[in-house]
Image (cartoon, rainbow, N blue to C red):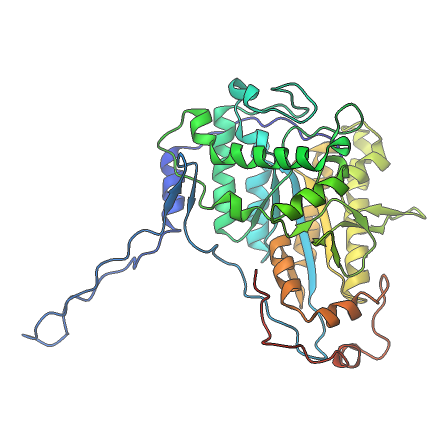
Length: 422
């Protein structure tokens, strides 16, 4: 997984940010009936208008605005019910730069009944002028392999984060400096160093106003301490110690591994929502569901390879993801986990491929294109014995006697069905 390019700015005004937040507050919004309706009747005393649900946190960079909108209530499957086909589209190092890919894929998601997970890099909320505030484990202060941001870039990213959350998307973390390999890479970090890195990522989100000097902009409409429940590590390294740290900090899932297309289980107390291996058209081996990995196996380390091959490379990624989707949709119904970057590698061919996959799969019957949070909520709501039985199905394997027979044998769950308390 290559380091994500440094964020560059586009223009957004604070008034637009404030207006978008207003849609989150609680209020009646319409004309009030001030009488009983009959001529001469005494006027009915009205209850006072509800107070705003916005409660600023710290310096006002974030705020509590109530429950996140547009989150479906997960329901436990009935005995014999065929599972829905979940698909998760997720983005490493999410931020808005001059390419406007964050805002573009927000619209793609809305147009196709999808929500997604955006793994924010904390240093994208920290201006270059304040880089020394970042103290990465095993590195000198102010060091980052993906750089930092500027004030306009932070403003643009904040706008997209706010709108994404209001639309029901999830804001996770891709941590900060994106250190891979030896000599201080994340694979060498201790549990305590991971905790420090996570806390710094949260801190940069909680203090973006102070660090940029912006005072009048609207806050992010969520408490990041509570919102942050999952991550993907840089280069998929350091997972063992990260998961121990994440469990202690209250995370609910991790997506830093590589797995086959089978139903997920728990690992280190977290849902293991790893990316998966899918068919690689034209090859005898399978490919990880991530744009970077397709690129490396097509053009090597050259991020802008042969222009004559770019369309084919994008088609190859699209068709591989669709092959993996069909294998699950017609088979074991295991969730399909896809990872991407907001990058224009090989002329943007992978962005085109992902968009075509979203358009193709998210509108099919029984398909739910969701965030990791929503998938974890659904898994928590299920009968554990039913999930255990689903995990016995191999890649692409549909129940031989059909779904009604396969899942009807699960013992009746104890207690009241519904969402598991958290």
